[in-house]
Length: 184
Image (cartoon, rainbow, N blue to C red; front, side):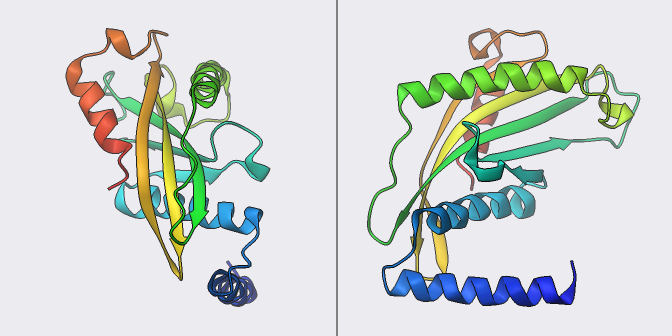
């Protein structure tokens, strides 16, 4: 990142903080703040590589991937892809909750993501033929001043490389995914 991009980011951040204080933060900026906050949690606290959905054009706003490639020959290597829908509110308002329609869309997206990931030729070679776990969840974020906070979270469901949903998975995996999606 160039020094100028860093400078522009700082000015935009200061502008956004001013708009929050004045109660003038627009919906797009509010959403970006929440999404970037979740992105930071996944990157810094959980060690994931993260991408944001451009223009929120999918049910998942934040996409994260992580795998342990210390042992490339390990056939039990798990690749975890997290798909998270983010709803953001300003100050004391409560973020909108995820509804049944959103949950179904996230599940459909998880299935499509699994299918496309297995076909995607440009992924690292070490990820070919590995166990793929795609989980879906929701994060409600409240933006107060300069520091957003997690208001609520929900683990929705998962799909993995043999195509079965959560009900066929061991309890330990469900517990781990539920804990992961708390974003703590």
